[in-house]
Image (cartoon, rainbow, N blue to C red; front, top):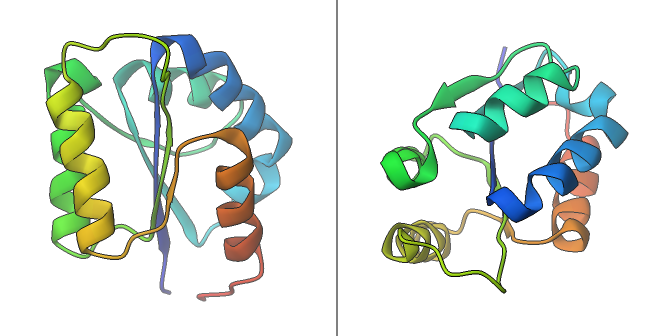
Length: 130
């Protein structure tokens, strides 16, 4: 069976939005052909929200963004949903820019807000990789 691998990342000010986004699309995120990777706290929160399986990497400031960037570089990631908080300063802005740049370089769809993420997931809902 082939899988779609999707990364879920959210800044602290956007974690509630990410949980709401995932809960509204729980049947999709729990599909057997969907693999999820999430940074630290975001992963824990979406798991508690009802996602059956999620691989958790380090939190963003501790290298999680870089771990997901490496997966993008290796061609392992089909999409990245990164709910960024554009109104706050982040100590790991360089890592965030790196992840976004790698998505562009490797042509991996990147949703940085609710509406762009909705469009990406709507596209993937129609895909059957099994």
